[in-house]
View (spheres, one colour):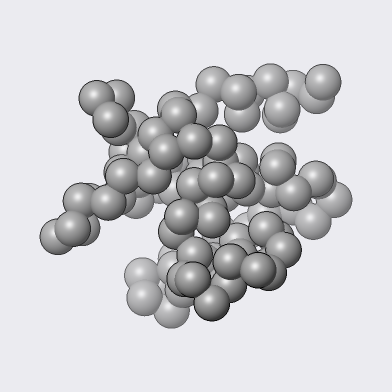
Length: 96
């Protein structure tokens, strides 16, 4: 297991994004990404869902997050969740 994969195991099992609806996302990073994605993208590959969310962040928050393409889908989703936490968009939901 790579050091990146080891660190991704340290991610919280639930996060919340401070919005008026106080949405909490639970599970693995891949499950969180699926919950964040619109229903029309649920049948798309995980990587496509992350890319959609990245484009929305760029459009709505002027935030560009670069992720490597040479990693597996689970690591890709984990890096996305880690980036959300790192820049302060998401916060751990310890009580969720």
